[in-house]
Every structure is written in C-alpha cells, then in structure tokens.
Image (tube, rainbow, N blue to C red; front, side, top):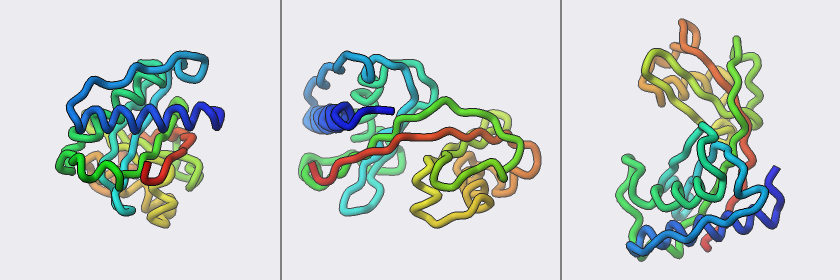
Length: 180
C-alpha cells in the first residue's frame, strides 16, 4: 500500500512530468525512498472534462515506482495512439489518476474475478489485452462483459476467454487528483 503522503507526492510528480512533456522541457527527477524505489507495475490515466484523454502503463515490475510514474505521465501526453497530443491549453483541465498494480496471477475461470477488486488480462498467442479494475465498475459490467471487453481490447473474439485464452487478474491501488 502506498501511504497517502506518498500518493500526493506521486500525483504532483505525475503532473510535473505531464506538463514538462507538453512544454518540451526536461522531466522532473524521480524521488527516492521506500515507496518510490519499489519496482511495480503502474498505469497513468488522464481525463479532460470527465472524458478519457489517455492511459498508458506497464504491468511488469521492471522499474522503481517513482521512475515509472515520471515516464508514463510524460508519455501519456502524446503517446496513446487513440488520442491527439495534449496541448498546453488543456493542462489546467486534465485530471490525473495513478494505478499501482500488484503482480498478476493466472485464474482458471471468470468465477474467480471480483468486480471492483480485480483488473483483467487476456492472452492468446501474441495478443493480449488489459483492463484496470475501475473500468468494470465505471461501465457496470458483470464478469462475462468484463472478459468479453478485455478480449476485444486484445483484438480477439469476445468469447476467446471461453476457448483457450489465458486469464490473469491483478489488483490496483488507485488514486488521483482533480484539475491540478
């Protein structure tokens, strides 16, 4: 668990990294210390006026949390292929959300998915898709809908979870700011 004070520091760090990328400045240095040095997966999601504006992440715990947040918060400004780059005029309207992930674990059945607690990864062959835990809650999906949408995200048929796709769940500690 990330302490509340460290959550606030990560959110300030993410906002600085996002703003630096938009303004073409150097990113802020990653802080150090216990929470910030721990390798873990994370996602940075941005919204503008309540609408998704970008979301990028890494599942594997390959970098310290502080460094991964700096990287993702900068990258989400212009590297999510679904969206145009964030403009300087939008910065005051952008909300930032950070999801710090637990390691994933494979499950044998969608009956093991707890909506609101688990994020989901579907893998088959070279294709994989991931949806964060909060997505199923926001969309009011049940387990089957969650699995089907995660399959679609992987560019698989919506019922691939029934026919050979592997399923993994993970948890996320989610926290955010509102308009800076």
